[in-house]
Length: 260
Image (cartoon, rainbow, N blue to C red; front, side, top):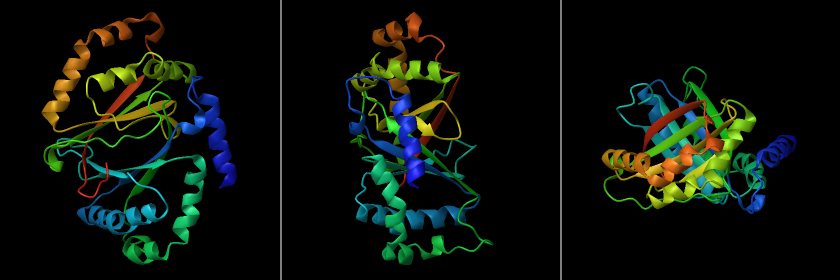
């Protein structure tokens, strides 16, 4: 585990843009995606996360854990995925978590149905984990304060892939030095995090999450964004052209037990 974390640290330092922010002020995020194929699997994961895993994370000193599901209109993923977002203060905290959870007797008891599930009835079909480091332009996660019913709230997770490592870093620079992060903040996008993907299935890649009270508010914000003079000026700059090869957009609802 130490070798793994040192490798991740090396990658983080290698790819981090050189700005005035110290690297140790930037949080790390783990996004876990559970792929499920039945309501029974979904219910089992919900029960495990709510009753066992999140309380165990709290005992390990980790809070503000987000759990989300695709909106019903997303026919490709609705009822088939569960997203969990865990913030870490440091790589050391990330590295220590597995050992702490392995020794947590309360987790073993409360999560028995999930942890001891037989191979004939697994709780998921597949699981994916992504490790990110926060942008210098927003080094820490911010839990938004949204109004209205939880079931109406939209959390938009975006993934921007780059053609090459150098071109990808240009898009990161556009967010940080070009102040695209500040633009989103000024327009009220309620960003939860911005992160550089250190380890994941799609590389090179950055991801970020914004949040809205409902779908209509989300759509209105993007219309305003597209027409904003600052965005038009920034997106027209020669140095920021053609710096994204693919964009994936996931619209999510928070679960009732999500802390974000």
